[in-house]
Image (cartoon, helix red, strand yellow):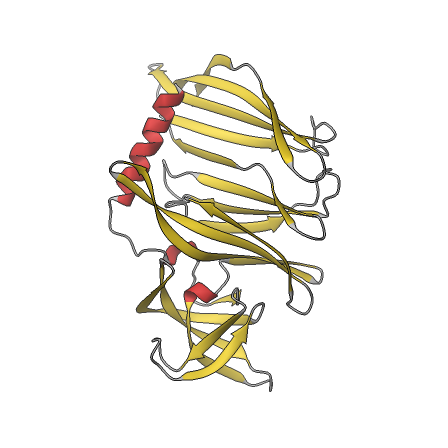
Length: 297
């Protein structure tokens, strides 16, 4: 059944990648006008949306700005090809200025908690060969933590093939009972169509550095298949001290019952257990799969 699930997932991704798309622009959740912050240490604002245009200002990481609109002009840096955006911001003199900025310098998302700012950037995109005829974009994604002066006090880069899972969200969820951690920063890239997965990445902050924790994903197509993963942390119901438990459930449609909009799924469910020692999460064991049928409307 697992082979069937991943074959279906492969088909949906392959079909999506074969279509024309506006490259990497949609990983930033754009609206008509929206508030963002600068994600690069330093970047330049120009008079027009071009690298050859007059330089009118420089902005540093953590600076709040407003994106007024995206332009049709695109620029590729380190494999990341996105548009220039028109921005508005407050200068050091308290006046309001406007100009154009390459969107890659803008954080994909950010979350403020007290005097600290958690943010995420996409820094680089490389091609990754998944099979003989199937190539995907491999994204270098960095999470950063800024103090009240917008100084970077911690950062962690990871490489992920997030595909067409373009809707970004981020939040902090506390330590959830994991010793030595002050907070957990969770980011996700979600799909807005059937067959496009949602990925969830967890980064524990211990006051000195980010520690990459186990990740999870979910994907499905109504009435055809689904794959879901969930974590149980020590402080949650069913949790155990110093352990992270992942529950994994996969299902493929077996046969229609004959009833309208009713299906029978072949379901496989198991758990994975990770031991947390205060510095890292280590895989310990995998339970024996339980198989059963489920009727859903």
